[in-house]
Length: 128
Image 1 (tube, rainbow, N blue to C red):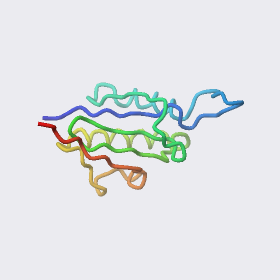
Image 2 (cartoon, rainbow, N blue to C red):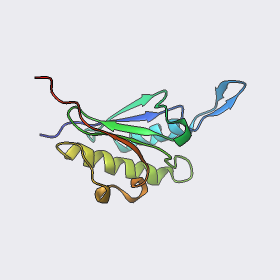
Image 3 (cartoon, rainbow, N blue to C red):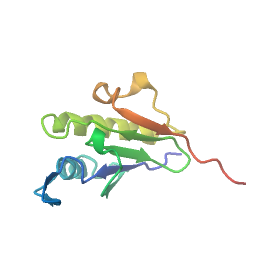
Image 4 (tube, one colour):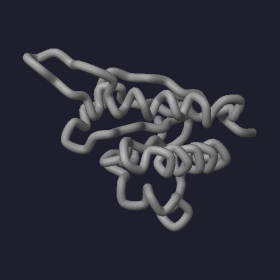
């Protein structure tokens, strides 16, 4: 059985700030817009989040699903290489969705993302 995965995109990442206020559209928001198109009808859920607390590693995303490993990725090129980043994230999300435990080995990850994993979180164990 394939369990849908959810890709969280930080929309604060890559923001421009002036006098403590965010101005303009952030790199994370642009990334989210492109992913909305790329993931349409894919079975992968997409959700924006205001902060993933990876500010020193922006742009950041996280992918998770019930009973599966979760990943936090950062330092994503969301401006100059945004189309390549979107393609790589779609590939990773599809791999995550297909794996019964969500574990995507290093060798199977898209090249662009191999060294951008900030953390891998194991699935919660059932309390039964």
